[in-house]
Length: 412
Image (cartoon, helix red, strand yellow):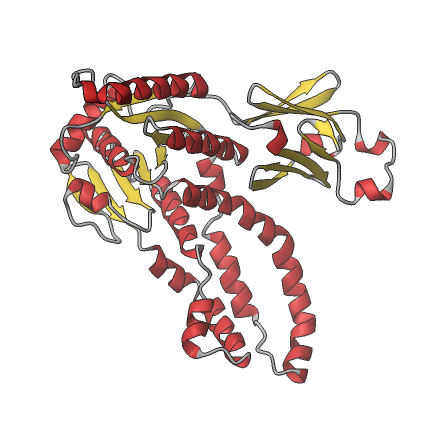
């Protein structure tokens, strides 16, 4: 069972690449479904067929679906939304505005994750291909399972206990609508729908992310950052698709400068993303719309390569025993030391790269060990854990509260 996620900067051809890959898998005899989680759906346009919120057969062995995440969210969010509407109306918010405020922006995207897991676990499909939203939305989408798990494991139980004590008082004194067990039950069911999603998406034997880029400076720069952030959250990029390269057959002098730039950017892609393989696709002479056009694109892109195979292995995060302690290694390709911050809080390792932060729950083998050192070199973050927490020298209270903090590999 394979899950292939395609993402990239808007307009680079990720939908075309995802559609062509799905078709190539189906032609190879694999039961394949291709899903679109991009709010601006264009998957149906790529195939030239009508797609909706339920799987539709495109060709034998291949079905497609454009997820109506808004409808799923409204269904699962009903109890919580009803309570929020009461709160907003109590606060004097107009009905229409309350309706809008009770639906959190971006929340609908979460439900596309549960659909991916449902199809992966159903046994009906060999390959699930996902046409993701552009990179910023995809990063937010893929970081949600871990963030939600953190809140549900820590904040949710405490909030429920406090609610049982405080709600009756607030209801009698202030008349504020307070959440009942049905609201907390809805939130719990909401979380349960995502249970196991992260395990699926971070299983490098089953799930891979493929970045689609054009040979342009801004596009390549964004893809590099995306690779870093995906690795931060434990997702494996197993291939980069360099799309819309000018063909060698184009010999008009007007294109010489473009061809030179393309060659320069392609070289930087191959060098920078190594050892991740780079698949190349030339600029098509016509629009790639329809089954036959997509088939031709897939043949040129993959050649003899199995599109459903794991094209680059390895684990984004590894823990090994080293010199009486342990070393945690995390791949952070293209990360800059100046953009990296580390901290330790209880059983969590706090990692911030640029604008993205991960509270990584440490495995049991590391929780009793204090951080000894950290370094970032050649795109790999190494954090050593030494001794035993019980035998570690006590630190001042001012240090232990926020945890150990480091920046750029040096203690801070």
